[in-house]
Figure 1: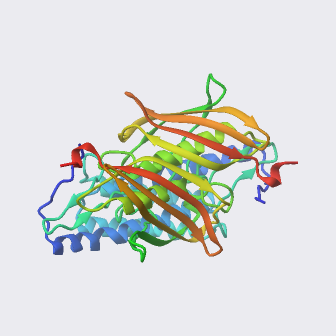
Figure 2: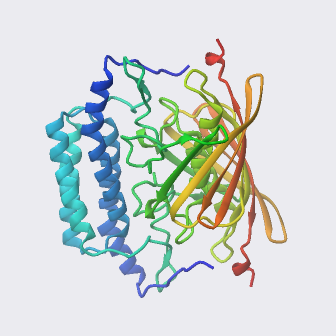
Figure 3: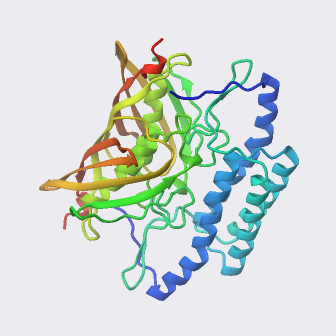
Length: 207
Length: 207
């Protein structure tokens, strides 16, 4: 069983929190990129490290005991803010913003930089899998019917360059607790990775 | 074709660079965790953001034009430092440290915290896929024979809790340019996700 706490937060409170934390998360995403790409000398790196440690100590003065999880506001706002793919408060998330696609699935345009590298200049094959897993799972799920990945297969047609990318996913069919979904990752030249998966309605969500 | 530049760096130079950049990357990993979990007020967050932006500006004063890639030192030291799974300079990487396993494959013990969350309190299924893709690819490859993922299938047996985890992978067989590998992710209670994949020797590495 998973815990999805409902917080005593109005839609207005949720927006206020977004206004506080979204700029912070964006700044940390920039810092991640700079950390990988910097050629600064030892002194500059040591000074940057001291500034970072000061920021971390400040943020840790009051913090959650565990991970962020998924919270709901009292008006029904969903806050999957810690999620590694879409989380507004997770600097590891690019983040992806999924929108409904014409064919009844989901789609997202996004950019992957140096932080997502595997082969030189290219997206790590496992990052492609991460994004496709989330997209297919999102297409297979709805707010009141979460579904978790049962099996998923990735087929790599060619390497995906770092840069501007696109993901698409849609449901093929549903049989009982199983939903079959497909999707693909693409760059401006076309499809780079295809995925197909079976998503399961967990026992605790079958009421 | 991929570019693996050889830098004019001795083994000693490589260690010196590690000494400069590894502490920085570790600090940024701490900051990522703090950014997700902080409950600090707006003023403290704004102050932390200013410190972070100052550090980023300092690091960006001299930086690579693109991503880090994979470099080699003149003594043959491999520096996959930008890699999203194992990269010493990539704050998104946990990072995993793979060692040879008894059965001729690779294994790694590692910890995943709040930054890798999908379902509340649990590892995102796609992060499991990211790690398994890297492990199977590592088992299938050698320094002089890189192999890229052709297809890979994940089978989710149960949800993987955030915390201390373990990954194992090994080659099953090789047929021409194709190498078949299997592996699994596990927590202290046993296996949570299984993977099997086909890894291909790229055309440019078939000489």
